[in-house]
Every structure is written in C-alpha cells, then in structure tokens.
Amino acid sequence: MTATPLGRSHQDGERFYVQTLEYTTESIDNFQFEIHNKRLDLHYIVEGEERIDVSPDTSYTGLAEYNSDRDIQYVQEPQNINQVLLHKGDFVLIGMHEPHRTNGFITKPSKVRKIVLKLGR
Image 1 (cartoon, rainbow, N blue to C red):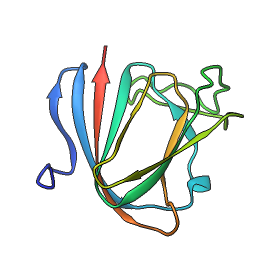
Image 2: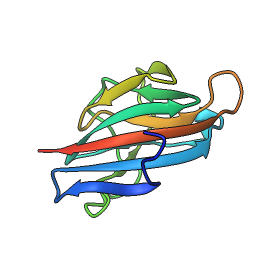
Image 3: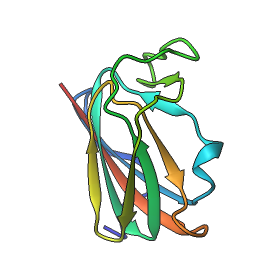
C-alpha cells in the first residue's frame, strides 16, 4: 500500500474510489467538521498516527451549502464527539451524514500516509 499513487485512483464510476493522502497532522481545532451524502469513508493509516473526531449526531447545522461535486458539507461542531486515535494499520469507517474532522495530531505532529476508500451506494 505504500506504492499506491497519491491522489484519486481505482475509480469505479460514482460507486467507489481510492484516495491516497500524505500530510503532517495539526491541532484538530484547525479543522471543521464535515459530512458526506453519497459515500462512506474508510480511513486506513499506512504510516504515522492521527486523531479523527466523529459524532453520532446526524442532526447538524450546515456552515456552508452542500457541494455535490465533492460530496461534502461543512457543519457546526456537534455536542457529542468521539475521539478516534489511529496508528499504523488501524482503520475507521465513517458513515454518511456522520459529522467528522480529520488530520489531528495525537500528542505531537506526525507525518501520515493514509488511504481513504470512498464507498458509494
């Protein structure tokens, strides 16, 4: 999986694609919560570690209009948040309409290589 090309690949129309990302984690507070209407996200950590906040609250208030081309809407921070701490080899499945934010460091910034499977209906 370290050879997966950066960016979008392995696309099957609107139903499925793989997105490979590399970045350095930051304070989770630097990121907004987002939701997706068309796809589930499966985040798999190839290298590094990352904090992802996920909320079970599916009644949310949008901060911006839904972008159907990117299947994303930024939403207000929910009241109930679960912190998911991921290390190399870990994964988390985030459902449609589940507010979440990614790219957070756990104790200090970490270089992350991550594969996100975007699974459509």
